[in-house]
Structure formats: structure tokens, C-alpha cells
Image (cartoon, rainbow, N blue to C red; front, side, top):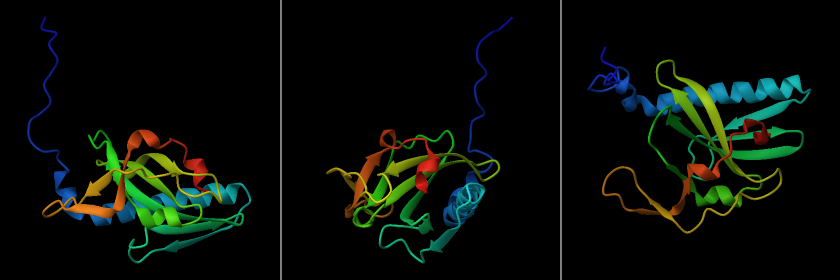
Length: 164
């Protein structure tokens, strides 16, 4: 018998076409995340308010208020099994009290979150230092983005309950 491992099929993933719709995917994941947060808060007896940013120029995608705590949240989506090792976070997020970032791992077969990772301080505390590593634009000439820090995924914790 031949026990050599089977090589994966070559070529792109069957859902590789989704890359051109990354903004829509991020919105679909955002709504699923917000729904999960609201459900958890309601089960704990807490009402919440959710605000969606039109653009994330000021460093956040959504704002959630619950139990007197206001969180400005930057969302990042990473495909499950992907090779991405870091994310770019806007410096402006650090100027928001209780600012934080949530990385959503997602399954490209069903466009659903498979895990959340949190980067931020305790409620009322500022965002931890983004460090001195500047990120580059992902498109075009790859110029430095002085208003963004590059954070390794190892600095995020798997604890979605810290969001609110």
C-alpha cells in the first residue's frame, strides 16, 4: 500500500472569486459579529447601542455602548487557514477611549466567522501601544502609511467577551 500523503489540488480555491468582493464580505462578517455581541449582552440583561461608521477614517468601523462602556472597534477579517501574520491598525484608534480591534477569522466556504481575536485594553483604558513599526499601503506603490501601525496577530487574544 502507498501511504504517501495526497497532494492538494492545484489551482485557486473554488471560492477565490470572493477576493474581489472583500468589502461585502467584511460587512457580512461585521453584521454577524454585531449580532453575536448583542445577543450575548441581552442574555446578560444588558441593552446595547450600535453605531456604524460610514468610513473608518478615524480608526474604527463600529461603536458599541453597553453598561456605560463605549468601545470604538476596528474590524479586520482574515480567511481561515490564511498566512497573514499581522494587521494594520490606525493610530487614531489609540486616541479613542476604550478603542480596540477585533480580528475575525472566517470560513470562505460559508462566509461565517470561525473565531474572534481581541486587541485592546480594559474598558476605559487606551489601546495598547502600536509600536514603531509602520505599515505600507497594500495597493499601488506600497508607500508607508504613517498613520497606521503594524501589529502581529500574536498580540491579539482569543476572547470575544472582552469587547463589551
